[in-house]
Image 1 (tube, rainbow, N blue to C red):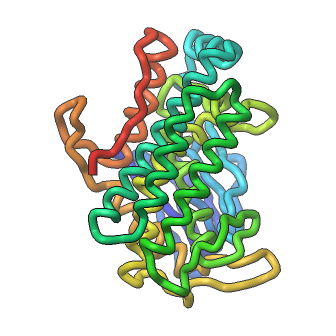
Image 2 (cartoon, rainbow, N blue to C red):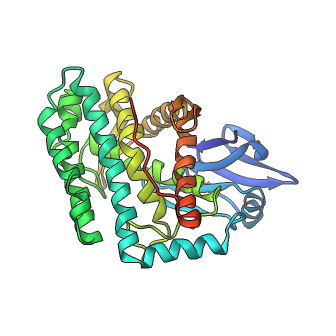
Image 3 (cartoon, helix red, strand yellow):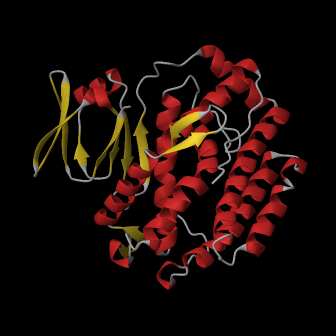
Length: 330
């Protein structure tokens, strides 16, 4: 399986013959191009057209984050698996309001069920989240009764706001209080972790979409407008609770990340470089863990779960096979 490369240092990316290297004050390091599927760039780097050309040939995606850890964009190489027929079917689903609402409802349903699974896990361990679990379940029951995407988005936002209220009971850590959801910029430590994790998850799913016939520009819950990519935002809703939120609970619960990993500035609260490294290292390790997948009867990694979700969407668009979002059983 190809790997992800994370770059935190400042330096230069260059192509040399049929390989790539990164040069920083720590020296030159070659990139195993045949084993690399994506590069996450958190440091200040310089690169040139020859480097991008070679990345495109080798189908390596580049994801850029600024100094504060905010996602700034991706280099999405020329699509090698794009299929006009699939794109047309995706568009047909988008412009048919009934089908679009139905599919968007599945994304919200999957997200809600995975939130409930997280809450159920902590309820069984004595955390005071029963009332919040009931409120999320009550909101979930309304998904099928809504008349348009705007109402569905509002419901999803309400559901997630309720769910986030459980974080204080789960964490029981005064240094990582939730208070309220703040973004652009996040105002406290916990919101910074949520924003950083979500940004990374969006790009990971974008990389997985690149390996399918799907067009990432056509989303259903998140409106396809002038934004470059939206399908990855839709699919990410399903995986946020079971991957990123659980990762955050682990990082804080085991004191792997503490307030010393943050800095406060005009742009809100930001993760320092050492904080980003701890977060990414633990995430990368977690994504390689495997679970027994009931439907296909074998073990798959968390990363593979994302790809399987995309294949289900392809089957919906091309073969009309009903889509059911992934719901964790643990």
